[in-house]
Length: 250
Image (cartoon, rainbow, N blue to C red; front, side, top):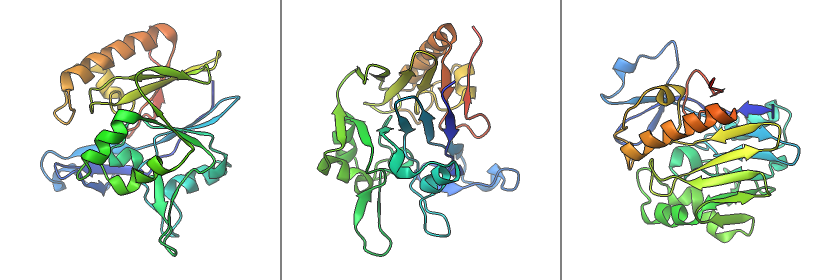
C-alpha cells in the first residue's frame, strides 16, 4: 500500500460561531462546550507514491510553541522536508482545511505559500466562492496568495492529474467541494474531504445540518462507500478522532 501519514493538528470542538477550540481527549468534557458543538479531528494527510509526495488539505495552520507550523513539524518528524511536497490537493477552502495554505512570517510579516515546491490544485469556482464569502467559514487572507502564484492549477469540473489522480466535483458540503482518488496501479486511496469526513458517517444515513446540501452529502457517502468496497479503496478521514483511514469489506 502507498504510505499514508496522518498529520493531525489535534482534536477540536466547533460550534455555530465556526471557531475551533482545542479539545483534549480523555480530559476535556463535551458537556463543558457550547450546546451543539461538534468534536472533530483536524487531520491533513501525506500520501507517498512512486511519483509524488501528495498533501491532502492543509489544516488550520496552527504553530507549535516553538513557532513552527504544526504541519511542517509533523512532516519533519516523519523524515519529510516540507519542501519535498510535490502536490497539494484541496478538497475545499473552509478555514479548517486551508489555514495551512499560506502563512505570515512572525518576524517579517511577509506571507508565503507553506509548500512552495508543490503544485496546488484548487477548484476555480470554489476559489471565487471562498473570496466572495470570506468571514466565518472562509478566511480570504489564508488563500488570496493562490491567485497570485504560478504554481497553482485551478480546475473546473472533473478530471485527471498526471494520469493517476482523479478529481470529481461533488458539491454537498459546500457548492464546489471536490474529492480525489489516487490510483497508482497498486493501490486506490480516496480522499473525500468533508463529504466523507468520519468513518461513523459512512456507516449511517443522515443529513448533516452544517452541510450546504445535507441530502446530497448523504447520497454521496453511500455511493462512495459502495464504489470503495468494490474497488478496494482506502478511505482517508480528515475529521475522525479515532480512525484516520480504513478499508471496507465488500
